[in-house]
Image (cartoon, rainbow, N blue to C red; front, side, top):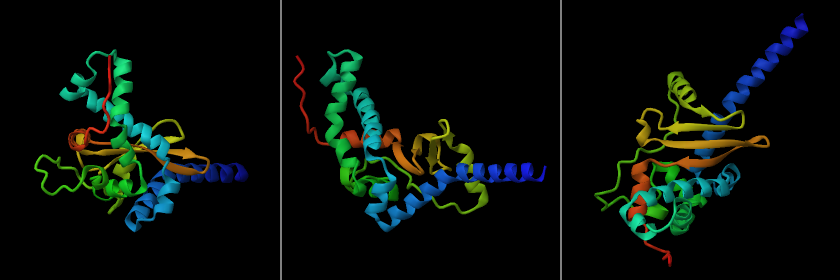
Length: 207
């Protein structure tokens, strides 16, 4: 009976550690961002998965714009989505570097891809991404507002106190024994601003 209780207790502790581990990984990533530690960021981020995540979001937003419809209007939805992904690829490539990620996670604004906020009256009011948990209540709120996808993936909305349309949604996935950032869902206003500011680097010849 005693051994059964001990094993049950150890399993419970292991389960708690597992549940907390992605948030610890996210905190470690935020410390690496603060220190501009490129090596740790490279280790903690799956840039291939991040590229796919951002490409889908920005291509989808591009297709909603008037210019996107004019550029791709003659294609069926799947072909239009593929063409849109090609057109926004130069912009996405600017976002999936350690320095661009540092910019984005530091203050919610990717200077490397979008330039400075100064002088941009149309720039959206994007809240800085904060991982500072000042109280147990804040920590619990972050935990309960996160969304798990099975046992190997979790999405965390930040800043936790902002409305959903102003939040970034960070997805971490367990790879081996390490949680890695695999996706960053951008607020719609930021996606629109990125498309507006990005130079048209690619021209498609659509028959």
